[in-house]
Length: 231
Length: 231
Picture 1 (tube, chains in turn purple, blue):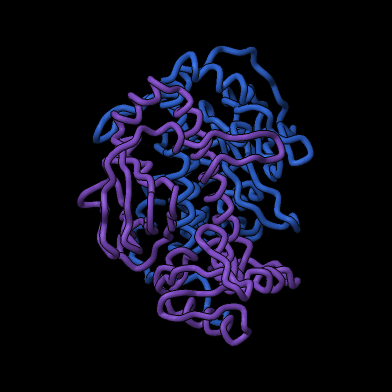
Picture 2: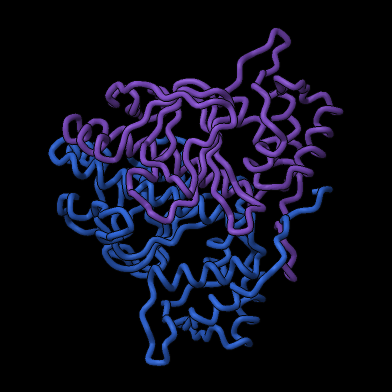
């Protein structure tokens, strides 16, 4: 997040307008909320990463968001949806701050700039979802795995002395949920990229050679449609 | 849109907090904004329908939103993105009201409930995008075409004496952009649904038998992954 400049101007950062609260800690793998126990707060990630996904009826497939430091999640608490299907799980040991719908509304009354900042944050979130949706239509799975690596590197990476971007490891299952494909396909594609020297991974880290992945994505390809007419 | 109740409570309607402005009219087919001339306003649809889509580099594929009466679009005006790739086109003769970023921010300072209402509206938009993204991963194209018809009927339909839901006609190209597939596939699937008696269409209208389409969607199917491992 962070206050940012762009071509036209600055946008507000909700963080500077949210009142300080005591932090909550969740251990790696712990469920923060789930359909059985829906989000009652808008959460801010102080430390660690959180996976937010939607349970499908058959439990087989899902598309996840990975929320990093300074990211917000649990936005549906603001509208109090009762048919909530979202689950948030700590991917690392995480530290969060949370505000109820009532607290957020009260704070906007006190400091209307929080309303501006939250709206702007949510517009950016909509644009990001729109981009990911487009990517699902336009790109084949191997390209989507590469795009996911670039996105993860830009959200949560640190540079290694060799010039790669280091990301704390994610399971292949989590990457699959982010891409919207199966674990098997992700394992296959990551092996391929590793053999090509674009990524290296250990149990703790994945080092991503972002310029090489970008270069590979620029290689021309034939646009395609994901399904045949027989569907 | 509209003020709505749900399991937990009510949410605010931005319409009741937006100051009245003089209306703008666009003829069917007219471009409201485009990458060459990006949105400088948040727009409210008073009458008619608007298609909002994102231009792809190769221009071949896109995923569109269809914004109906009382819907908002041009949200990116609130963050002043300069790399705007969105295009909005009038699908009917449309009447709009528009507010600049400055006007919205000023109004939120005056009436902080607009900040609450806009945030809630945008959270619902994010959830809808998330749903559509999931649908792309989980469902095959024929099901996605049927889901699109149900969504279009629930957003903008009126009942016929026969109990079908009548929607002002949309081109197969527009439905294809909404679904995220090709025009050819949409034509093929609509013909199939017409032969099955689930829809009827003329040049002006499409009548959708929503209960029968829902019933067809409930028929069990094997979950599938959209692409093979070879990608």
